[in-house]
Picture (cartoon, rainbow, N blue to C red):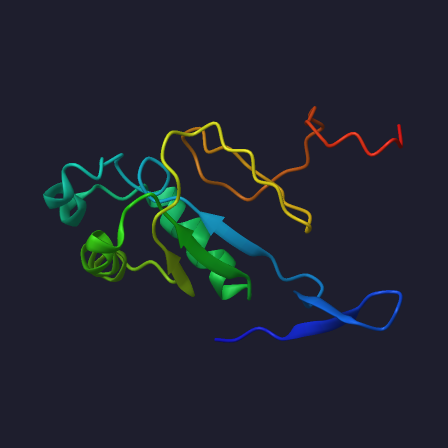
Length: 143
């Protein structure tokens, strides 16, 4: 399923990175400890039997059915791709893509030229709600 990307241009008329059509979200979702048991890369045999978090399955498949993009972004390595794809299929997860090799260790600081909204998983998947938080930003001189 390919989503339509809107062509964008800078002030001089040069093409810049396109963006998804309005209303479509591009979800990057971790696997271990987020949608299932937390399995370390050092124990790949457990990846095939990891327990699914049911609320994650329901919520993510709902978002997929609503037309959002679901990309699993995991610290598992390319060596674990076959196990991971088998497990996702066996457990009924709908998704568009799977990115392997996310850096391990947490404390992520994602720097991008596009708006990135980060949501920390804390034990239950639900629809997202609005909440005011404090964030770190680059000092661009505009306060």
